[in-house]
Figure 1 (cartoon, rainbow, N blue to C red):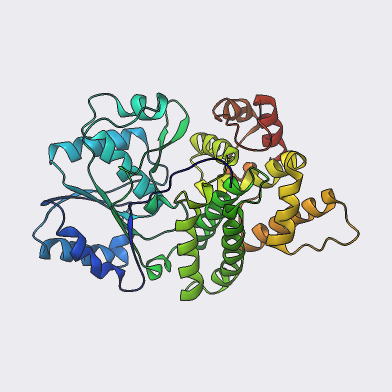
Figure 2 (cartoon, rainbow, N blue to C red):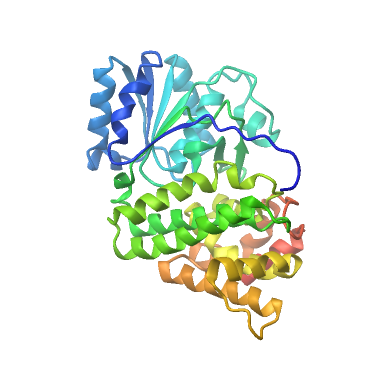
Length: 388
């Protein structure tokens, strides 16, 4: 393990078929005014909305609703939510949905009592929170982002064509999250597999960095193997509880900061993918899948030892009579075949990217230096063109 680190995660998780029952216990800890945040109404179709409203009323809560949170929450929506939260002196934000709803809720929690423009303060200047924070609780209906147990909050500025994530400290983490795998059964396949790849990419962003004998890498390999196996079951049997519960639990551990310990981490796939999302409004996981393989083929020689290990330990590639390069590339081929098998988007053209967007998408991709090769704009343009 390289470097010194601190690990703390204050989020309390309730996992399983009966996890919603614990909402009663959590609500007793907070005041009367609850901001109920959700998306475009799917929770009303599956009956979850009525159950939550009933629990809130049984606990004598004042319910203020903030609906219509979109898959890529916008800064305009954030301003609306922050205003609503402040005007109603909200005591708890209850996020019901997937990662976008959870991200948005955390962004509202730090923005409601912010005296400055939250987009400028948190997303352009990347400043810390120095104002009152409204606590957040999450009830998951879609998995992938890990937002239920971290401080991340991604917001899109449509006018500026920027999609930016701010990783807030543990004071912004959800106070509790309710994870019932059965609530994910009704997701369309496209959304399910998008979430699955978001999970995979969270793991690989952390895994493909450093070359020491790091415990975090062993954990990551186990999570990836479990995800691969469970994803193959889930695409054929969406209501297989074992597979869906595994996927939900893997998503949480993929991005609650545990497997980042002792790692420099990469995140360039996310930076490029988020820039694609800002221009196309494409589903987040698909923006990642569309460029991942070409990105890894572009950089694998700079981290050959780890890419070889990935091939052997995750994909069971046999090493006899093969060079390290051949082994590493075979591992990436296995990954590509799995991605195609579960139905992921494999090129950015299918997401709506056109040739004239390439230069601007590259400009909007924040360049980080934690991976095996620090990219420049020309590198990003090359990767994007190979991903067309």
